[in-house]
Amino acid sequence: MKEIEIRTSKCVNFQFWNNDIGQPDHININWEKAGCSSPVGRRGGRQLLNLEAPQCFLDRNIIVRQLLHAMGFYPEQGRSDRDEYVEINWWNIQDGQVFNFEKYDTVDYGVPYDYTSIMHFKCDAFAIDPSQYTVHSKKPEGNDAYAQSERKRITESFGLGGLSDGDILQIRRFYGRTQFLETQNTPRTLKERTRFCPGAEAIFLEGRSNTLKLQPSFNKFFRQIILTSAICTGIHFAQTSPV
Image (cartoon, rainbow, N blue to C red; front, side, top):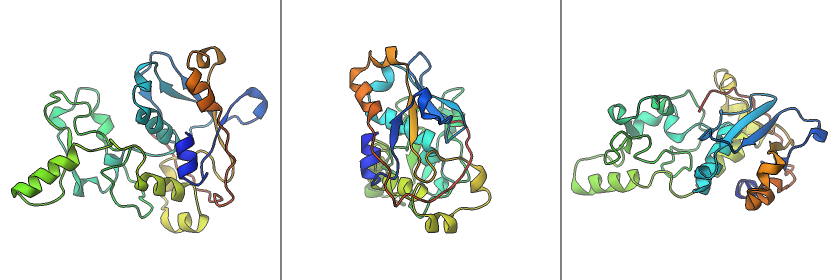
């Protein structure tokens, strides 16, 4: 969370929630056996974000990815322009996981398709046969040895580098300057997802105190408070759908 706050110039900030805050919309961090998942965007009221311990804490990218879902961001390969950049091998996707590869009508805020996005699935995500890709790059084009090698390199690096520059730029523009958002959104987009933290509000996180004590490093992590910067005054409402 601190990385998101700092790298977005504090356009987004997280605060620990309690009943005295008087803010009904907040995220409840659930550590029970429910996997690693979150709805996309603000739903209103108490909203569940599942981070099952210990499996969801083996890779910090998992935590950041679920937070970004809650903030309103879909998987990168779910972008409306994804077919220009990646191919989905539907035959190799596990039963019940096809929804994770759906394509959405999205707005990219002027940010190109990002193979290095933390929101991009790994090449073998939800694979029936892990030795075969479920999603792979179409770029660079061509069938020569170099192009094939480069496509393989790009494909096998999907989503491995943490928050990319493209991720940060999208967050800052989604939560940032009003004039940019007013020129970039569309009526359809306004129905896609609702962002947390409109204006200068914070994203509030709730976790049961007895559970937080079992995760001492994350107890401090979730209590980190950094005030929102004055540049983050844009208001952009969009609706959500399941991850």
